[in-house]
Image 1 (cartoon, rainbow, N blue to C red):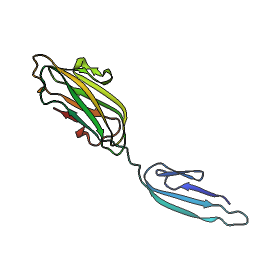
Image 2: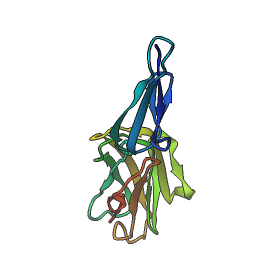
Image 3: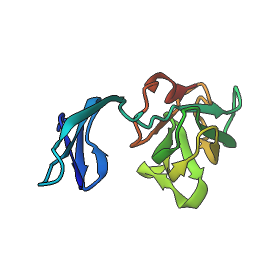
Image 4: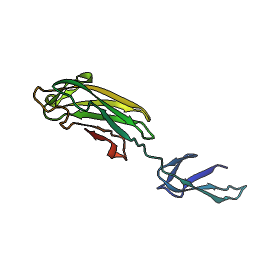
Length: 173
């Protein structure tokens, strides 16, 4: 005789045929019934319960570092911006950028990413694996008569993947 299964806790699990489908975290109770017929009595209902844990949410931990000379006079110099994912999962849709201060302009960046009239460069990476880094090299030019690298500039990174450690997503010189 066929056995039918049903969930006793619909918020946590459901039954589709003989398969259990998990719909949330908590205690899942599956009840089994077997009807009788003219030859056999119905079997007593049997229940089995177990705990269903929530799936871990993906998280990234982007960290930004920047390398530039301590001082630069008029003319070009190189800045590197490195974004590293220290999180347990890959980061998706990483947006990062470099902003320069007064008297400086971005004059070369990867993929023609110069934006905002030379005051910065924006970068995009579709994904970045856990433990992996991406580095962008940018040429910044100090205008003649400007104070040089003493002016403020900084780099940032963000992702659509949850990042619980936002404090390391920004660096400045």
